[in-house]
Structure formats: structure tokens, C-alpha cells
Length: 182
Length: 182
Image (cartoon, rainbow over all chains, first blue to last red; front, side, top):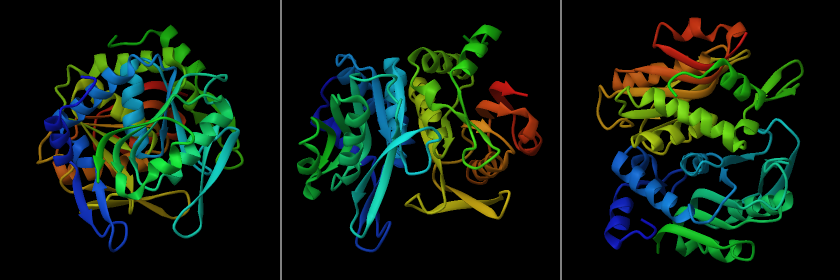
């Protein structure tokens, strides 16, 4: 189904576990492992993503380490296309392009292989489990454009709307979120 | 296809890139990103895994962080079953069970959620991209048995036979490797 009903969205949201004070006090962590180990929920979600993106004529799915690997690889395999990992600095073995992004305190850095898309101008979808402030996603979008020029869309399973990550990411790409938390 | 021909195995092996001196001098790293971004190779591999495991009547695929997430989630989604991540210490938000294992110098530790399989005695397949000395896989096998008792098989895309990881893992589970490097 290309569009999920409100009832289907409520079901998916009900399978996501809130874990208070993780990774630090005051944060309520959205635990998607309880969606992943629910075969009905995981299948509904992936059926939806497959139905939506099979009409996009994509060449690659790029997933952000490490929960983006889960949804990205599952979707790429269903669509019969290639998967590209965007990783934390130092994890990819071949020549990389990297991008720093700001955290609450300090910086972090992610990388992509310079030949990740076997050429340039390919139709790429970026995917991650969640968009919060959008820093990691913005860095990943910049990386994909550096090595490939084109980025068709960025897809998130959960959008924490109150953190306004879309503002940061929307100058770089179109955005689709399956579930939104106000 | 439940069994790959020698020609299909040679093709898959040809898509894996050798990167010398990564992560440190003297090591030749098996880079599977060049298999993943080759749609023909990734599809052939996943078609094979799906054909093999659809007859196993599995309940869950457990994947080891983070390259095991890629193959594990893709396979779980194709089989319509749940996916369970086995992660580095400190990454899983809920109550975990953990297992230490030895490295060349020192120790590392991996974890699984205590309720990862929504009960016990489920039919679980463990998957990772590569088995070398088998330390991580052995720890993951022990964790699955701690929280679930049963482990049907452990599956690896690449087995570095000369490191004899099977010796360490075989007391805990059956083992299947798609590609072997002598």
C-alpha cells in the first residue's frame, strides 16, 4: 500500500517502545527493536516502503549507520537494487569522502566510499530510522551529493517533528517520514 | 536457488574488494560494499539465502552489528519474519544480557535485549557478513541461547577458513557459509 491508513500508523507507533533516560537523563528513546521483532509490523512497514519506492526508478538505497542499514538493506533487497552504507569515520576500508556535523557538544563525522554509486548521477534514496535535529541526515545528504550529485529523497521511519530536523535537511533534498511524533 | 553453482560463487567472490592494510598493516580486508552496490550480486546472494532459509520455518533472524544488520534485515524482510539486532555494549536502550569475548589484545562485549525474541524456544538464525576467528559469533551464539535456548544455525557470507572460526563456533550451533576463502 502506497499510503498507510491512520489505523496502520497507530499500529506501527504502538510497536515502538519508549525507553526513558536513554542514552542520558531526560531523553525518551524511541526503541524500534520492538517494531523489528514484530513480524506483522516489520512486514507492514516494508510492504509500504516497497510500494512507495518501486515507482521511483531508484538505482541505490543509501543507509546511515547503523539502524539505517536495517531498513535500507531490506528495501534495496526487495527492490532488487544496490545498497550503500554511510558510516562513522574510520569504518569504511577504501577511499572515502567525509563530512563533519555538529552535536550538542562537539562534532562527529561520517563517510561514504568515493565510488559508492559506481559512477555519478544515479537515482539515490537516503534512509534512516529517525530524524531528530537533522544533523546526521544533513551530513549524509551532502556526502551523497558530493560523490553522486543527485539525491531523490530522504526517508525516515520516525520524524520527531518538535526538533525541526526538516528545516535543516529540506535545503538539500525532499523528505518523506512514515510516522510523525509531534 | 538453494545451492549456488561454482560459477555463481566465483562471480560473488569477484565482487568483493580486497583492501590491503586495513584496519591495520598486514591485514587484507574483505570489502563487501562492492558486492552490496552491485545489484546483480546482491540480488543473487539474497535470492540464494531466501531459497535456503524459507524451508527452515524460522521465527527470527538475529544480525550482528553492523554488517550483519544488512544481510539479516534483508533476509528477515524477504521471509516476512522479525529481525533482532545483536549490538556493541551500550547501544541497546532496554534491559540487556551481555557477553564478553577476547580480541587479539583485550576484550570486547556485545549485548542483546532480554526480550528480543518475545518469549523463548523460537527458531532463530544468526547471521553476519564474515567469520574470522569466530570470537564475536561465539559470543552472539551464547547470547541467543541465554535468552532463547534455541539457535537453528549461524550463517556467514564469507568464511576465512584459515582462521578456523568454525572450531570455536561449532560446539554452539550448526554453521553455513556461502563463500569460503582457504
